[in-house]
Image 1: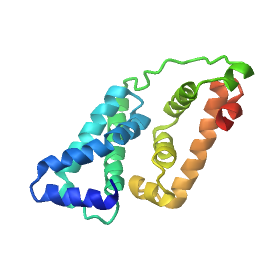
Image 2: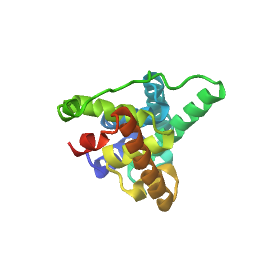
Image 3: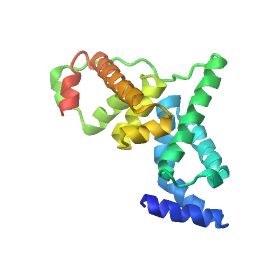
Length: 191
């Protein structure tokens, strides 16, 4: 589907065809979960945020004017919902990072022969250790392939601020990968 098809579905929904919303949910549910997980760092919280965001989007669909892509508008709702969830959990001093500290003691041979799945897993672990906003921006930029301007609209940050945060996120990601990979992160990135 493209943005024009999204807009057609939205018009159908606004005209009373509520079941058309399931097509939008199906299209964006994976990315909604991924974006929420990049901020919440917890699977159940990410699922809850994604569901809440879809409910909020549906309830506020009449406010969507089509000036930006539906996906940009939805990502903004996911972003705000996820940040709110994290703030609430932090307020109650709950531990939102359920990942155990891992120690990847790999030698050069093992790193060179890591399976694609293992490399993705290590990258996901590194992303989960970033600050919420850095992880979110990296996911939008690299996985969703949004432009700086689209990320700016989604996060309501200036383009220059997005560029700075993206730069810091890359730098912090490399530092985390270096730590996880015993200083051999370049071989992971180059592969």
